[in-house]
Amino acid sequence: MRIRKASLIDPDANGLYGTAAVALSLFVFAYSTRFGPISILAYYGLWLPLVLVDYRKVLGNYGRFVWIFAFVILACLSTFWSAAPGVTARAGIQYLSHIVCALIAMRVIDIGTLTRGAIAGVAIVLLYSLLFGVHHYDPLDGTYSFVGAFASKNQLGFYASLGIYFAFMAVVVLGERGVWRAAAGGAGAIAAYSLFASQSATSVLTTVAILGLCVAMRAITALRPASRKGLFIGVAVFGGVAAVALIYAGVIDLVLGAFGKDSTLTGRTYLWQQGIEAAQASPIFGIGYQAYWVQGFSEAERLWEEFYITARSGFHFHNTYIEAAVETGLVGLMLLTMLLLTAVFGQLKRLLSEDRDAEAMVLFGIAMLLLIRSFVEIDIMNPYHVGSFLLYFTAGKLTVARRRQAVTWLWPGDGPTPAYRPRPSM
Image (cartoon, rainbow, N blue to C red):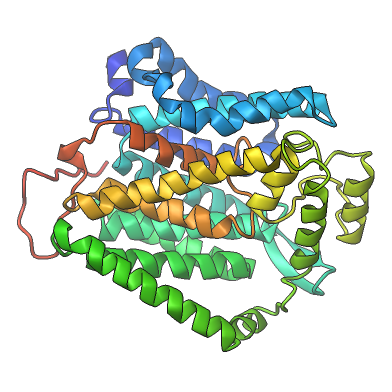
């Protein structure tokens, strides 16, 4: 059977290819350090050749993407003043090409395909970790934790969070039926077990917070668009006041204690202090993209030793904004923050304005998950990372026209409507 090349870039016809491409991409993001350059080449092979089918449709008008590329352009330019120019140049090119792949994916697949691919990909990633994973001893808190096939329990926890989130969205928002409903249930169960096994406080708390937020947004969007914004503002103000009250009541210490943590977040507050001091050395443009954690540099070596990082790699300040300020200065911090907040508020605006917009619902949840995690992780700053892929996918969707036939969902009890036609289960 011959397959038309044009169908590979048609969101209504490339469901099978798009699902497989997303799933394999997530596996590469998870384990590229294990499988090496060949896995990265496979990732590029999934997306870049699509440009040859119809480059105008696949790439679009990059003149409209200046705000999306602003941070990575600065990251690449930082080669000229970097403390480690070779490292910065290589990482900047990798990050740029990674973003291009994410934007290609954004233009050729729809939200249903992304969700199905994420469910399949996360399930494969977590099963691999459960089969071949190990436990690591943490000398900072004196505990053993399951890290799977990753180097950190927080990365295992992040994939578990994504598995639970996409499974929830597939059933509750996209209304998957048949095989994919069962797949969502299975992937969600595997993800829940992996999340429990990882004992990652960051991932557990962010997962609970995002699911709660999505349930609240689902209730708010039950109203007419004209009434949603007022209710959302009221709920947001009430939630902010409640959060401040809980903080002053000492609830945070109780929650951290339940996970065996203290107020220093297992040394992260000290690490943040060191990062802020490092950022002050080059406050405007930083020391260069990925030019701080370089073997042979005295400060990086000192922190690796203090935090028992014997591999002398794969470490960071556990805060996106501090990491951005150290590497790219206040200019880079502003550009990256702008990108993240535009993704959040852009999808929120669509969610509050459109009638039952499933795409905005799913992407808003992704953007909020990345925003919350940005205060304790750096999911969006590195190439070949699922967090940066999802961020640029989410931001890029704000630049394309709405596809009305595929973005609305049905409420329980609604009859079939021509507005939403989910693909049949494969």
